[in-house]
Image (cartoon, rainbow, N blue to C red; front, side):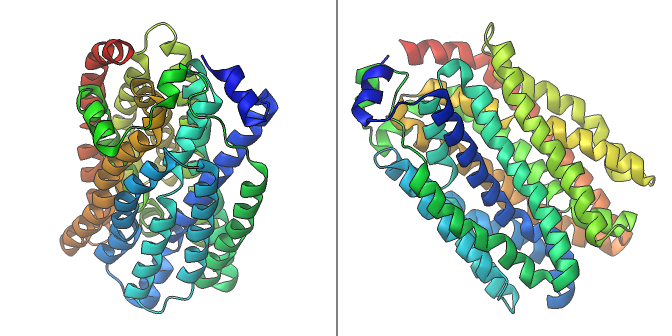
Length: 431
């Protein structure tokens, strides 16, 4: 363990208050990340009507327009972060994605908006992998599930704020101003983050030799290639995200079309029924995994498998019930249960690799997660909605989302397979 000597060398005492402040600031940065990423979801019906778009175009805007550059740039940025000051990279990333969100409000065509969302994705590629690595240097292994779960809950806090602010500003001033209102504060926050957050020594809780390693990209991939559980976790996360993004990005449109809720009321429903429930599930998933995993590490993977299994039957009333209270109540439960996976999955992957590989490991995990989830989920749902809409009208979206959710459920099996492989891989990583 190199904690004391590294803290002394850095000139910073990483007391509980320092680490908690850093975790909160990283979580706020992640909230800005998802405010700017998901603001389009609550505004999409107004944008669809003004620009005369089809659902497949909305699927492209909320998925591949962002995901294409996000997954491509994420790996080189993470490679950089494993060697450079991670705090500085995150500060720059927040400023870029926030500025591009402001520019989204000036778009006058589908392709201009597509380009602006592409820019948001470029900035956000520098957000999570460096943050994951910093958190694993702020907190010891037995606390990482909770810490990464707390951080991951920031995405849902961002969704809550994005839905509320987006709905309010859109109703009062129009959708263009909504992009500007949520984007501008992020530029200011980037400066505060840069000035106040302290960079932790790399590998604080590992041996000095492990912390000193500076592996190449090829070496990192070679290490991960030897851990079958990592690839199973990545596919499991990707399939879970396929449903999360594919269904979640169209839920506001579904609620508006099928249940007649719009404007501020829609923002409140989606903020607390979607974002709030997701935040609770993500946070509790990390804490519960740490508690259960202290005796049996496979619980880090059994937990999301069990939660997604419990959520599956609730998808039917969420999408098929005509009674609005039943549909929204089911949505709350489904969202909470299906968002337990991220903190435990990240903590498990970080346990497999040395400290200098963590940002890149997160980036590779997110590459697969977002390629399957964000890159394929929304456009698949959008195309399917257009196709089914020809025969079923408004209900076409309802049936499309049901099919997407069914495909996503396959992820449960991959979590179970990863749990079976995990003990062997952990033994190999510690050997």
